[in-house]
Length: 124
Length: 279
Image 1 (cartoon, chains in turn orange, green):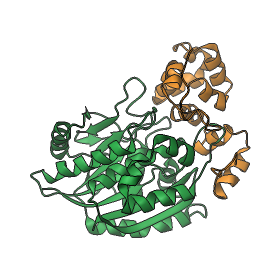
Image 2 (cartoon, rainbow over the protein chains, first blue to last red):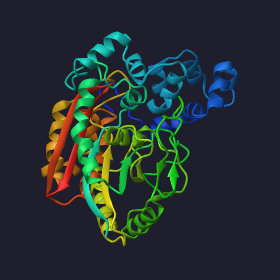
Image 3 (cartoon, chains in turn yellow, orange):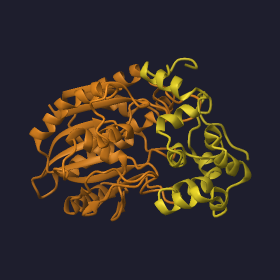
Image 4 (cartoon, rainbow over the protein chains, first blue to last red):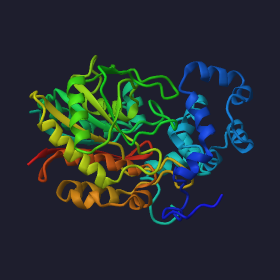
């Protein structure tokens, strides 16, 4: 898909949820939004693959959900607030989800935050 | 006319709500943060507002990608706490103020702010955490609340400049109301934080300090901050700070800083709390 560059594309380690991501992730986020309903959460937990058949996910998105590939979920169009609904299904905190996208262990990520977080200079 | 008694800037970190709801505020991690709230709670108890206009963003609760209003005003009698994917917060139902809300809708739209009008919506942590921060755990919220919801989830959010102008229009709208309600305007969200991708965990205290300083004494300069600067310096979720500009616009050109507290970290966020009154 031809797409002009945006002025924020060079920010490292950041996926801005813009129109490109929103179009890519529409079905994925629709699935994630459905988890706001308790009955849907139960149905998903009971049969994850079967529940996903209700939504038009592509193969990459489907795999990212089933394998809980947290960073990849954003790369294939998931928005982080929507993605957290899946993480909450697994009993994760938002900090767990944030940390899981960085490749750090939950303990290391929590310690980094207690120490003042990631520096905006350099890669942190 | 309704009188604006002050403005509150307040982060809306979900973990703060969870700490309150689960009785964890005295734990070592949380106690230093919650100790900073006493002064703010005393202030709002003294002001005793009739209405709080809470500028906040919905996080895939009332709104999804199906419909994305840039500005949405809540007109209902009440707004239930939202199930955001893990059950609703155990907090009181938010009581609205339909008469004033409809006045705001008429005034703001005719003042060329093309709001989406909402008669039914649940409210998520974006709105209820600031209420908990300021009011604690009452059986019922002590005042009516008018939700003013701003899209900051789907890029692009409205510009800081647009938010500042909306705040100024909100002031005109409140001042043209027939009632004599005391109103506090909340701007919520921020400060610096990034919840996504490899740069998750970003905190930028210098950016936030400068933002707060200039929000007080040079709001036009803050209103001119481009989105790129928020994204780069305050993190992809730090762009929520544009909502504080609606609050600032609702106050006069010159304000008095009543109270400021910041805390690193609450969960993943540089937490900010700011109280302003017209000078």
